[in-house]
Length: 365
Image 1: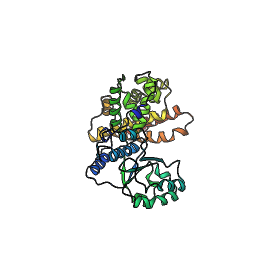
Image 2 (image 1 turned 120 degrees about the horizontal axis):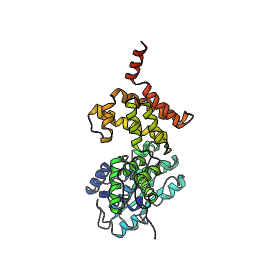
Image 3 (image 1 turned 90 degrees about the vertical axis):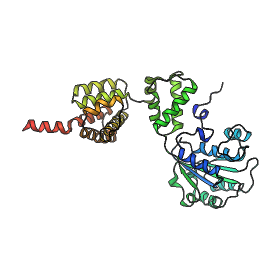
């Protein structure tokens, strides 16, 4: 029995299913409904945010057998063939593997011919920034004055490498990185539909590890489900991703707040049993300090776990800890041992606290 990975199974089939790109969805839907179609569109953004997905949905909107519509039926032969990647009038071209000008000319030689089955012949060129300068020059004239039956959909993760002459001939849409909240909510919906048991706290960790990419999040979710033998458990997810239990970071910060060095090292010893990545530990500490600072200065609510730290850490301490932690994270590879570097960073934070420095100077006097 074949298994379809979640990133393919839950790929949006229409604009209503699209998550987190409302600004692009609204512009394209309005253009289709008002019949104000451009001949060239450029979709930019980091990996896994929906560039080629939007391009395929757009192709269905243009060629659906029910007519040009912003809500393709998804069931006609055209929609089905586009979903399966075998529609003859949707030409998907990987620019990374076809960079030569001869490849581009071969593609453009067929532009003049009308589509075989659909209303429009759609050219989807992925990673278009990989084309050579000669290929871009060959493409320019066609991009500026294409036949009325042709639409170019260009996708790239690096728009800065595209010539200005190409950018000026396209409508450009920048797809945003997915927020952790969007990713976690979408994963929760998928797990509910798939009836997969999930422990609380797993999804935020996966969403954070995805770093703004929904495709990466779905791949990590697949991996976590396999790792947990069909369910998501917090210890196994953190172990798989190399994440650190935030409880350790809170314990360290709480001990630092009251200047209890013994408690700080006891918490580090407990954390060391899980062989953590100390660079990630520092990153998690900085994230906690950021949330505390925002809560203190902007009166924004913070999670209940950080309530006590918000009360006992002064704004000066929070800013000092954040600055020292940021420098320590950068310098950690220079330490003889990662744990030593982390411990020195924590000791430095405590040693330079303004209230402690002031009290030690008064004792000397």
